[in-house]
Amino acid sequence: MDFESLPTLDLTEPQRRLDEVVRTFERQIGQGGAENKRLSRLHRMLPYALGAALKNGQQSWQAIRELCNDKQPIELSVAVPPLVRNLAELLYWTVFLLDAPKEQGETMERVIWAKMHLSNQSLRKHYAKEKEWQLHVDLLDQQRDWWERNCSITPEEKMRGAEDRKVLAHSRHWAS
Image 1 (tube, one colour):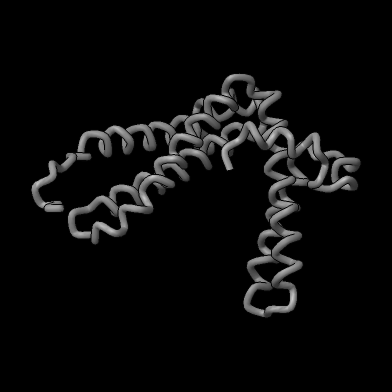
Image 2: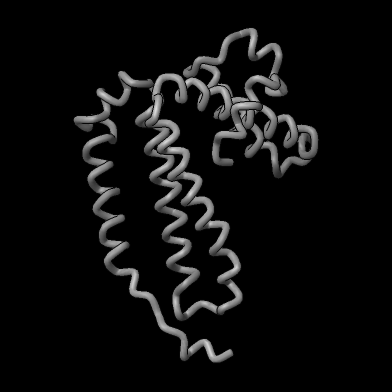
């Protein structure tokens, strides 16, 4: 197939609009922004969650742009569909969270904690004796501990662990 004859897509305008959204978000919702306090009243983690979703989406979009660059080998385009899926999941996740911030925010906390807990257990099981992985695993433990301190994870939930079927059942509704 002659790829040179295929039409190209100018992404200048979508990129300009995305950059504008990011700047507006950082100004309005970022720390000290006018909307930060209002969103925090809906759920304390809402500004953080929206910021993480926006940053993830921005990175996915930049990767897509780079992979679709005419200078890249066409073989790299196989990485684009998972990145597009990630963008779609982020959109779903954001709408799901904004639909009922308090309830969905608490669900989000539990699901994120449960996934971190399971991931950390798996990493410790497989790499605990490998010195190169120790820093990474320790940082993930610190991140999980931060979630435990700052979120609605009860002592009972911690005792049951991430295998709690009620917590994991909610993860079906969340982008992975």
